[in-house]
Amino acid sequence: MRPVQRVLRISLKALGWLTLALLVVVLAWVASNGPWADAAPQASPPALQQRPVTLAPAHNGFVALQAVSASDGPSWPQGPVWDCPVRREDCVGRWLADPAAVREAMQAAAPLGARCEQVAQAEGQEEVVAERPAEGPLANQPYVSLPMPSFRILGRCVTWFGLQAAVAATPVEAVAALARADRLARLALAGSRSLIGTQVSVAAVERAWLQAAGLAVTGRVDRRDLLGLLAPLPPAALSPRLWAPHEARFAREVTRDLVNPAVGCGSFMAAHVPRGWLDHLVCRYGVGLLPEQTAQDNDARWAARLALLPAEGPAACEQLDSPPWRETDRLWPSWRNTIGRWMLDVPGADWGVYAARQLDLELLRQTLSAQVLGQHPPGTVSLTRENGALRFAACRARRDPGQADATLRLPLI
Image 1: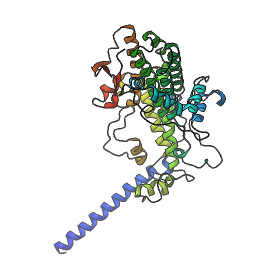
Image 2 (image 1 turned 180 degrees about the horizontal axis):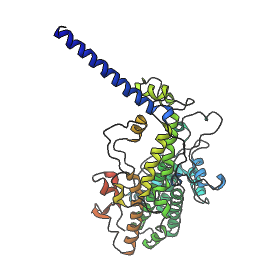
Image 3 (image 1 turned 180 degrees about the vertical axis):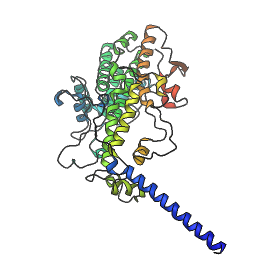
């Protein structure tokens, strides 16, 4: 046999063995990633069970808030009075400098403001999360396309009460308006179920307090009156346990939709977007994504995060800057449930930033109370004088130095 023929024969044999080995690997991977390889269904752990809504709709302020902008076509006005960022600017000073503009803005929103007044008197608030009905036109819709509640209304109502306080005729009327803002925001936070609901409510409570502090600086209300607004929040309202069950459930619903023939991947994609081979692999053949295993892996990650938390109250800041709260990049794909794990291993995923904001809200409350009482702020808070105010920095600023949104402007009470 000639040398060239021998080399060719050896090469072809090696190529054949290589192809066979590759085929065996592919078949083994398919065997480990088809629908038949999925985990047996199991219930989510108790820590990830969502709290039921106990308030009847007629007594639920969350339901009433949804109706504030939903009927007869009114919409909130826009402009510098309504859209002033109280975390960064002296909004109260701007309002007091131009009371005519404030009254005009309030007049334009009077019908909606009247509804805010009604909602503020509700027995309580419990967020009603999206549910897929068992029958009807929404029964086969992707979970992400179900009607979601509006949260922007809460901040508008809190601003409405702040404007009321700014133009109030007496300090008593001003404090009463500030108390309505505080009560409304507190109830929203305590009744939150989702991450977005919690974060919007945290911002609403923060806004209510900063508006009150801004009025105290000007002498429109007595500094001591702030203490009534700065009572401790319910410990449960400061814990990520408030929203973690909903986020775990959201991931489960979306994952199962991907392999649900009644929903399918196509429901998540625009018709003109070309489908890649991964999409075909998952959507047509159900290979690579094990929905039940993905849900259980996701639940396990949430359970690991919650295990680091106290039974109630906010998380400790040092726990939020490393896994499992702040994920590190994973370099290698998983052999089993490859696409499911790839979906979970989002590079740079940072859940700790949301928990840190809840902690910062409690530190803000303690700092404002300390200012009123002439005491030192918590040791974990940094206060720096800046343009006639204070720059408040706490957990978020330590985790993410340089992020403008991690600090806020605090009036010099």
